[in-house]
Image (cartoon, rainbow, N blue to C red; front, side, top):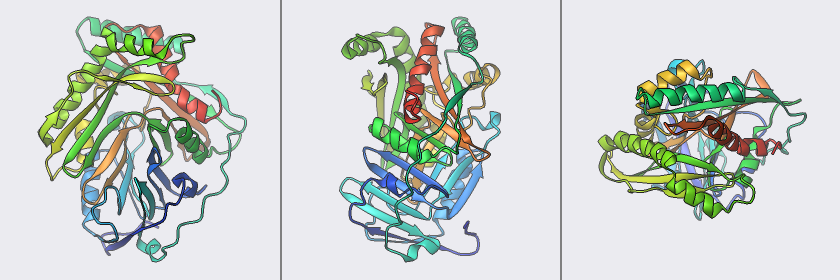
Length: 417
């Protein structure tokens, strides 16, 4: 049921609960389900009390502020980060070049864990019961899965990379992030809960998301606002770990010394720092990146922190930061134009913000990477996405290999790798 907030206030109740075990087990096979988990912490969300489809994060922020002001919330744990009513969202990378809308969902039931604290929030008609929902049905593995190809073949995409390198070397743009896709089909509708469970098991240090047909495990936190503190993790510069016989420590050393990867990373850090600065009273930007190791790749990583102005919500910060140089390029407007002209791909909600915001404006927004999308009209198909940052020293074959490494988490989750 979608409630008409213009006519009645909504009541919400948050209660402490015993540890419910793995949260993902409460996701049912049907209905509106959302999840945002990392290292077993976060939440799953069931049902839909309200839904807002939009083209901009700014409009979503205004809508959620209006809704928040109409929610009466009784809580056993006031002030605990992430508890209480939430809006969960997934936004398009470029609304001007996408046929799809962004979405913000207010769930009816939320089951969460953070540290030793576990809770359940119920909204609207769902608030009357203190019992946990029943566990979901058995997960279904994909059957008869097969590749359908993408918008471009590998050689075609390499030629586009070469064209962009030429533009960069002529000083027409500094960096462009190019993406490619891969479509797969199954005999039966794809059970995204199965895909999500495999991602949680294989990539526990990432932010695993499941929102309105989008599923993935992203290593990149666009922004977290917790009280007066703001954090953003920037990832740019990548090396795959599928090189047989090469010590990962050697690869990490090479990555940290790679002028190409360092230049790509610096563009991304600068874009995030500039976007955050107007909203912060103070900021800390590390002088050099660290190396973040994941099961399939390593990234150069920088965690930017700051003290945020009190009237700036996590959703508004996400709007200010997106699209960063890590997923678009530098300068942003030129990179967007080049992507739109050359990429031949509607990214939809790939590389857009995905996450949540609460009624106080706190929240977490990641970038929807290492993922895929299942659409309601084609439930047997999933579209995977992967991208690479192109700079002056980029080699088309190496960039194609990088996207292949970034497809690996979803291919593993679907049983193909």
